[in-house]
Image (cartoon, rainbow, N blue to C red; front, side, top):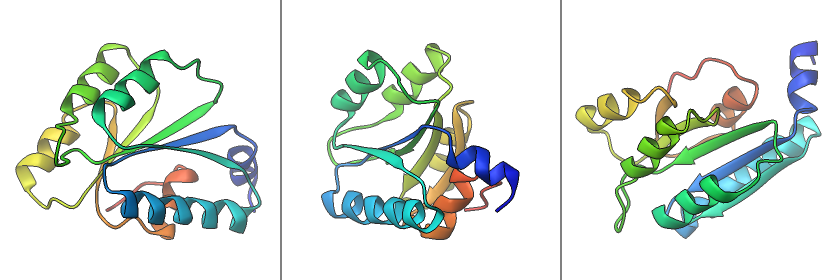
Length: 142
């Protein structure tokens, strides 16, 4: 492992999964755990199943993490998570946001990527390769 990987592995990282699909959350959590085990690190994971809870969590929690990666399903049955993106932009958050969506609509992708806080638009499913690329801060071509 390179020294770049060593510094990433020692960084206190939280991954926040914002999606109302419990099966998707379970699979994504397993993917994150697989990468953590493979590289011998600890990654803290928080699952949030609705927009209001996500906004509250991200606004009110004292962030004890050096790095926070957020996977956001932008369109869920009950929520339009653009409000969350607006709030993240307005508070100049350093959180790394990756939109993780089943939608292949180009207009939606363009709209999401118009937010400075959105690092990439990823079509579901998340894979161990994609997550490892993000975790080790490599360019994501999803």
